[in-house]
Amino acid sequence: MSKIQLLDSRLANQIAAGEVVERPASVLKELLENALDAGSESISVDVEQGGVKLLRVRDNGSGIERDDLPLALSRHATSKIRGLDDLEAIGTLGFRGEALAAISSVSRLSLASNVEGEPEGWQVTVEGRDMAPSVSPAGHPRGTTVTMRDLFFNTPARRRFLRTEKTEFNHLEEVFRRIALSEFNTAFRLTHNQKVIHQLPAGLDDTLRAARVAKLCGKGFIEQAVPVDVERDGLRLHGWMGLPTFSRSQADLQYFYVNGRVIRDKVVSHAVRQAYSDVLYHGRHPAYVLFLELDPAMVDVNVHPTKHEVRFREQRMVHGFLYSSLHRVIAGVRPGQELAGSVADEGGPAAGMAPAMAPSQGNMSLTSPTGSGGSSLSHPAGQAYPSTGGGAFGYGQGARQADAYGALVRGHVGESAPSVMPPANENETVPPLGYAVAQLHGIFILAENEQGMVVVDMHAAHERITYERLKQSWAEDKVRSQPLLVPVSLAVSSREADFAEQQPEVFSRLGFVVQRAGPETLVVREVPALLRNGDSESMVRDVLSDLLAEGSSERIAQKLDELLSTMACHGSVRANRRLTIPEMNALLRDMEATERSGQCNHGRPTWTQMSIKDLDRLFMRGQ
Image (tube, rainbow, N blue to C red; front, top):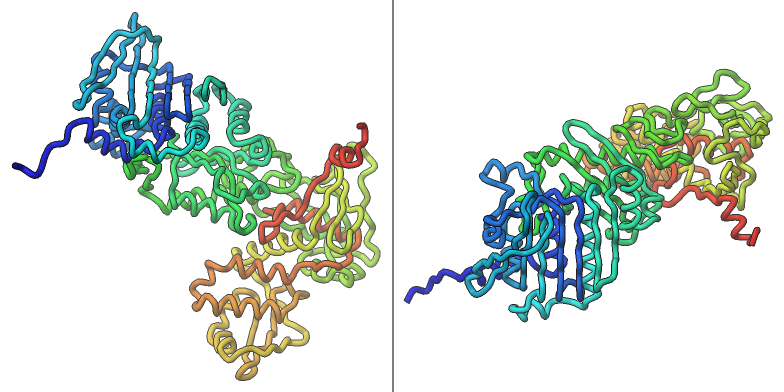
C-alpha cells in the first residue's frame, strides 16, 4: 500500500485555510478586497455574533457570470492574473485565487451574483467532501453577495481558538476601518446584530474624505493632522500625518497603504520613525494615514499569504523619498500655520497655510540689521513683523541680562531697547504667538495674541532654536569657532585625553579646539561661536563621553543630532533667567521662523494656546 496519498479537495482547502482564515476578520478582509477589485461603488457588511454566526458582504460591482460561478469557489482560480508577467506587476488587491475556496471549506458559504444586462442572478454553493459546486437561479441585482455562516463548524479545534464575540468584532471592525480608509470613492456600511455601526458615504471631495478619516480615526486626529501630498521621481505620497503633539502610547493609529493595499513594512516604519525622530517624546508613537502610489512593477506583493507584507525593488529610493517628504512636512509646521492645506512638494509652500508661515528653506534666522536702531525680522514670503528691538543681545544692557540667548541672535540693540506692545491699529498684523506680556517664575513666557493667551516654555523653545541652527550650520559646514579669552582646563581620564589627542578633527568639525596639556588634562581654546556663552566644560565632557561610547569617529554622523541636541541644551537659557520684554518678543519671533519649534529636542511641547473661550469656561463666564 502506498504511503503517499492524494488529499481530497476539502481537506486540501482546509489546510490552505490555515494560512488565509484565522478568524472572521480574515474572512472580511478577503471579501472586501474582492468587492473593491470588482469596481464596487457601494459595499454593505452585515455581521452577527462577531462574524462567527453570520458575515454577509454585498456590493454593486461588475458581478460574476453564470459560467464562471463554479470556478469562483475553486482553488487557484482567479480573473486577476493570467501569467508570470501579471504576477510581477499586480495592480489588484487579490490575485491568489485561494480565499473563497478556503473560506467555503471551513464554513457554510453561498455566493449570489448578477452582471449588467442579465434579467436574473445565479447562486453557487459547494457540498460534500469533494466540494462539488451547485448552481441555481437567484433573484439578485447587479453585483455580488457572499454569505458565510457558522465559521469553523466542521473544525471544532479551530473554533475553540476564537475569542469572545466582542473581541472578534473588534478585530473585524479594525479590518473594516482599514479597508474603508483605502478607498474613499466607495460607500461603506457596517451592521452588527442588526445595529448600524458605520455608515460612510463616498468621499468625492476633500471635505468628505476628511470626514471619513475623522469618523474612523477620531476627530482629534484630523484636527491635529497635517495633510500631505508630495510627488517626485514616479512616487506619490499623500494622506494625513499627525502632529508630534498627537503622539500615542501604542502604535495603534498607523495606517500605511501601497497602491491601495494596507501593509506593514520595515522600510516604511523606519523611514517614518526617522522623520519623527527629534520631535517625538521618547516611548511615544506617531499617528498617520498615508498612501504611497508607485509603479506596481516596483513592489512585490506576493510575499505572504495574507498580503500584509511587501518588498520594494528599490528600497533605498523609497526610504529616502518617505523620510525626506515627511521630514520636510514636519519641519514646515510652525506656530500659527493653518493646517487645512497640503504640502505641494518638498520644501514648497503649503496650500491653505497662512502665507507668512508656509514652509520655506533658508528662512530660519533673523536678517542682519540695516542700522543701529533695530532690526527687521525676516519671515517667509517676505513679511516683516514689527521689530521687537531684541534682534541682538551681544551688546548693551540686553547682553548682561540674557547673554546665553544673545549669542544666537545677530543684530544690535541700543542701551535702552523699547518694549513692544500689541498694535493699536486693528489692521496691523499680529504675529501668531503674539506679544510678550510677562515672565512667570523665570520659566514661562506669557504672551497675548488674537486668539487669547500663549504660554511658552522659555528653555524648551530656545533649545529647539539653538538645535536647528546648529544643524543648519553643520549641514553647511560653517560651524564658526571663537577663541576663548581664558582657555578652560578640565581634568579627564587618560583614555579620554588619548582620544581627544588622536582625533582632533572630530572636535574641530563641532567647532571646538581641544588640546592635550597633560596625561589627564585637556585645554579648550575655542568653542562654537553660537555657544560662546554656554558651559564649555560640560559640553566638551558630554561630547567626549558620546564619542567614546560609539567607539569610533565613523559613527559620529549617525549620532550627530544627539550631540548637537546636547550642545543646544547646554547653550540655551536656563530657568530663573530674567528676560526683558524685547528679549522675550525676539524669542517668540524666532520660534515662528524656526522649523519644528513646537517641540523641544526631546519631543516635549514648547508652547500652548489658551483661547478666550477656554478662559471664559475656566472662570464660568456667561454660564
